[in-house]
Image (cartoon, rainbow, N blue to C red; front, side):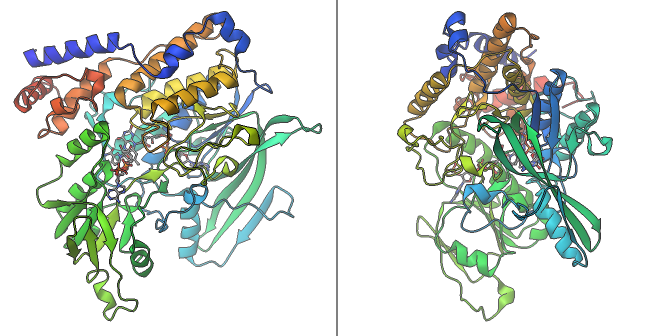
Length: 595
Ligand SMILES: Cc1cc2nc3c(=O)[nH]c(=O)nc-3n(C[C@H](O)[C@H](O)[C@H](O)COP(=O)(O)OP(=O)(O)OC[C@H]3O[C@@H](n4cnc5c(N)ncnc54)[C@H](O)[C@@H]3O)c2cc1C
Ligand SMILES: NC(=O)c1ccc[n+]([C@@H]2O[C@H](COP(=O)([O-])OP(=O)(O)OC[C@H]3O[C@@H](n4cnc5c(N)ncnc54)[C@H](OP(=O)(O)O)[C@@H]3O)[C@@H](O)[C@H]2O)c1
């Protein structure tokens, strides 16, 4: 093995074994003595046997497996027609992103609740409808996923594997969206919950519209009621909608994070989007480069979507511009530099947009679209002649089925005054989700659990531990701290984040993710000894080594040495130059047919 490879592997091993300073949780909660923890632990208000899972992406399916094997009654609700979540690629494109952004409680979808005077279950039939409108109704219900045809994954296959389903040997290291689509579906089939398994435990084409607290005749809280809406296509020109409710003791929210688009507040943009809705799009609508052939395109946003879409269309478009804004945080700045290092030379990188100059209200030549429109950048440069603009400006947290826990009026440094008696919300401006313990349990009501809400995680691996923690806590096999302690930990975390919530509040990244998973494993296994239940194994460490080499191979022109914080899992001090990195990759790839 090459010397450089040895250095890197030994660094990886040493660092992952000695990393002792993870999230605040580890020293504050885990440090409390067992007996004290037991007496002060959170007491659930009602027993939990029946669980609803919202979403049949990888996270929801893993949660299903975990809850099922622990003996819960489980139902999984999925708005789409098949399992797969984000990885269900279709040529069908989501609707235009609203400009300006909608309130987060409606940014993913606006819930359709049946008329208040009808008895449930209730059905509405729509017949003699234009075929296009039937497709639109289906599209609005299922929400086509935000991935494109040529998309390849941001990590090697080792980092996207579920325990009981190893990738077949011949699978290439870099996965396409199609590999991942088939993988998640296979996992669903393995657990007999694919859409064609007709499992009584699943309901596909079913959107969760509302989740409401349920009370008994004495006014005591006893669980949750879900209002559900099923879309059934009955013909080319007809469909029907069914509404009903189901009661559960607890809810797992595995509804994903990439459905509610974010568009920046740039003056003048609303007018452009109103006049030319087909020419202004969001990255969630991007599918294939052909539609941009011979066009001049402005892509906005220098993260993964922006740089990859710019790269994808650069071979077909006449000219591509990529508008990027600087980031003050070093982790994000370095990661951005890495992504930008892959942007082809024929893409011009330009600064942030300041202003979309008004377009003529009644264009004399409407075929010219936005071409005559001027876009002013923050450095004063004026650009014009664009055929299309794509906003790859990210997504927002949004849970339309829980509007009671959204409060857009709160600023990043504001919370609900405790004297008011009102619950702290989960979502404010959509940049983050707050009020969670371990990013898993809603502190105000820990019978709502969340899977995969963090940024910068390996969601396949992470969801196994998140699901395990939620399932064990609800079964009484692991304990949460008291509500007061959970809030204390939360406020400490907010203080550590600079006293305000923001876009990076949910960022874990490799090192914190590893620490979080280690903490969860230690906590669950320690509590299993006391309260019963099975022990769990930690994740395979081999993933880290493959990941690092893979990153080096993917970004050959970028020196990972300067990107220490983004790859902190590897110790942050590779000391390797570009040439050494290349040799490292050659050593690793030599003789391997799975690379
Ligand atoms: C462009 C893009 C590329 C990505 N690339 C990678 C990658 O390479 N590797 C990686 O690990 N991750 C990647 N991700 C992250 C990706 O989201 C995760 O891999 C994974 O999909 C997370 O699984 P999940 O189950 O948590 O969420 P999702 O896969 O998003 O699944 C959520 C499910 O919930 C359903 N749902 C939502 N609301 C409701 C409702 N109200 N009622 C019923 N059902 C509902 C949705 O239809 C969906 O099926 C990427 C994300 C994007 C946007
Ligand atoms: N191949 C793949 O697997 C693949 C491809 C695409 C996406 N993804 C994943 O999908 C998720 C979402 O990624 P994403 O790239 O869509 O969203 P993202 O990571 O949230 O990035 C959005 C970007 O838009 C920028 N932005 C916002 N407003 C802007 C403005 N006015 N001008 C210029 N830039 C602006 C943001 O800058 P600030 O940071 O300054 O706000 C940020 O860099 C990530 O988890 C990513 O890993 C994976």
